[in-house]
Image (cartoon, rainbow, N blue to C red; front, side, top):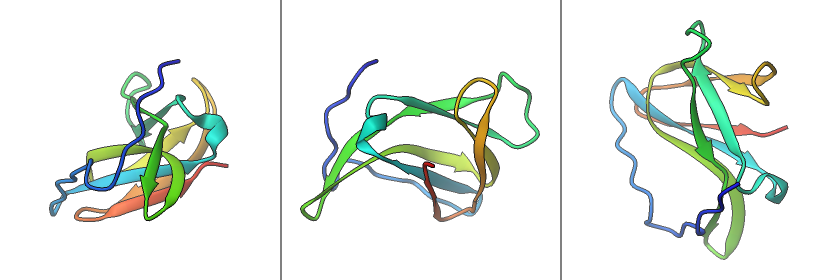
Length: 102
């Protein structure tokens, strides 16, 4: 497991558009450094992308989560492991979808 440095306000810039959105998965500190995979609903099993859970500091608060920028709008599966999905979410174009890790 690789731990990235914490991110601070202004350290992430998202480019959203009509057909492009983003996803944030909020987790607990226990998931720090974990790689969480997502995939478009209906895609082939090998078509997954991942992001590491990082510590994110803003407004005097510390939160933990994974960020998926520049996703094509659509529905995505969120994976616990190689075979177990923990949820599905719709990522709208021009906006940021949020998911709370179970």
